[in-house]
Length: 77
Image (cartoon, one colour):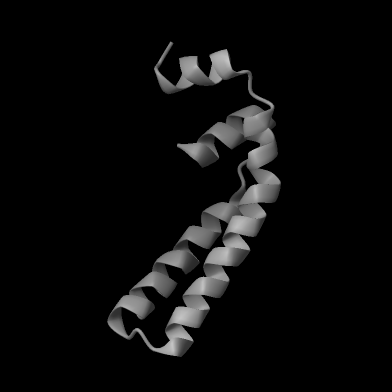
């Protein structure tokens, strides 16, 4: 829901953030399968890097949306 919204608002998809989700999924699976410190550390690093990018690319877009517009989008109005 979030990335298509950003694409609609900005005219471009946050490709790196979308790609991050594949890496996050693999890091989560590795940590679930083998919760070694290496796998947990890798997951933490991937997650923090993704959230940092998301904060820079997505949060400003969200903050620029009028709350009434956001409410209407969320509730199909």
